[in-house]
Length: 169
Image (cartoon, rainbow, N blue to C red; front, side, top):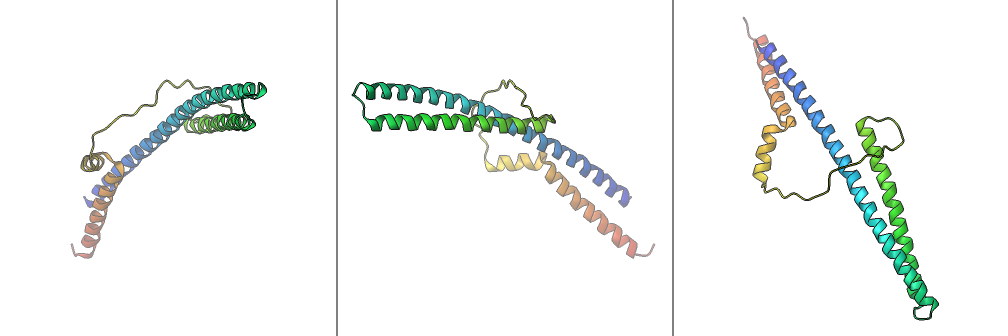
């Protein structure tokens, strides 16, 4: 009876480990997905910043050529334009990296980047949870906690088996 109880608990542990692995993979996929979304937004802002910097540079150049602007103003505009261009390049590289990570998690072996059309938006959702609520939710549904509880049951069962083997029939 005790060995059957132990095997039953071990089967439950395997089931919870499977659930735990599924949740881990889903979390990694969601993280990669939202990383790509974030990088796409950053590229949009970097392009907008580059456009503003180009406009500022062109105006500073015109002002300098007609004698109204200073050389410092023109050089500042050049530096800002260069920085905006660098930020756009960095953002594009980060997007490629994020897409590679998403491809890997999706199991796509190819190194070429698929042009995913992500339809979600980044928004903030407020959850009114306190520490006790989070603790009670996790203690009910977290597979790691369930595995630990079952390991305690197995240890107790193994202890009982060990005692019964020492005692006479």
